[in-house]
Image (cartoon, rainbow, N blue to C red; front, side):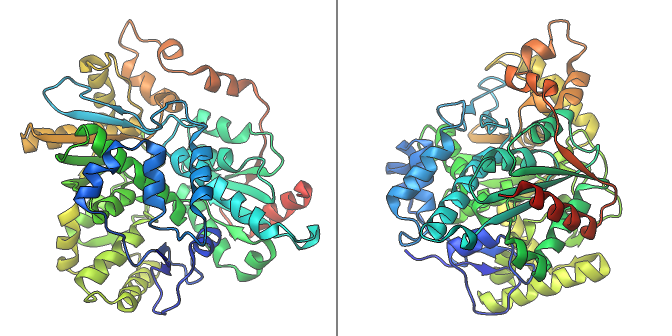
Length: 510
């Protein structure tokens, strides 16, 4: 099957191949690439065939529906998938901790932190790194050295994307990586993971400002045609479609784990900042996976919760600094993809071109007025698939503490603060629904060692608790002893960042 990709803002008929969408990352009009057609999978295929597959086999079945065989032949795609997940510590790749609080609640925690950087981003970025390398090797195969295509990957991180991107791309031929992060706004271990990678094709840029400032700079760089053509800029942030594609797999895989491969009721609860993680669940649902509901769990930066309750998408002036910093985001980049599908379905009578026009108008409004309002019919459409909950810092701490006390499988289960936001939201749902037949899958997005301060504050009152013994893996422990490599950018300014990239590229001489 041939699959094409279009921009979420385009009023044009033009579409791109999978390769072009992945390498380019962001569309030239500022929109995100989306597949206009979401492939359908029958219930018979799901429960008679897919439910019995390993994670890697399932990833192949899903990805081949979005990537045509003439772009990546079947054997090559299987090799890419197997190589990408060979770096994970768990044989199931994303294991499900079932009935963590005992059998009465059906609360399962999907552990997405078994990759090389101990965060859910590895599931996608190990694959994206191999994809970039695959496309470049193929395109450069018979070219002389001075004509070979090179990619300069530029990304922004609120914590975990950066290290996962670096570990996915370190040492890759003809790829250089620049990751921007907000100075002092990520955890020490997250900073160490990024800044201690010695490979010469990697450079971190510590920017004085917020994550949203960093994200805005990255988008401005993508919009700069001259800089782009000189450096062939590529994206690994959650704006890259391959990130979403790779994450779809764990929704299918964990659904089958929760229901023992049978049909059943499952609600997914997802800690959400940039919306990419939960958007993958939306694609799984639209493909045919019978998910009851996708629940957005936000911290005090609650733009998504407010949108579903009011229909207003508004960036507030100040980002709150919370215990779950990877979600300290004012604008959820990936939400635009969902808005396109909702606009097409509820406002544009199924017309792709009209949907692009509508989304483009909204984002122009957001730029000029700081907000836009959508029709109630669109909110009603969103509420068929989504719910939302907002969780405070106090509730986050209380949830880490409570889970440590009451968990049964295993005992003393330790949550990172982002996972705690999801579990707190899941517990509210369990109380509201009061339905023992529903399975609640709460996504665990990072290993608790990455957020030592929040975890220690919650658990230091327990005599038997020790961070060093119970939480910190040896691999992360040694990071603090390694030399750091970073460049400080004293102001959140696109010209300063471009100058730094030019200087470092000259030094890299790749």
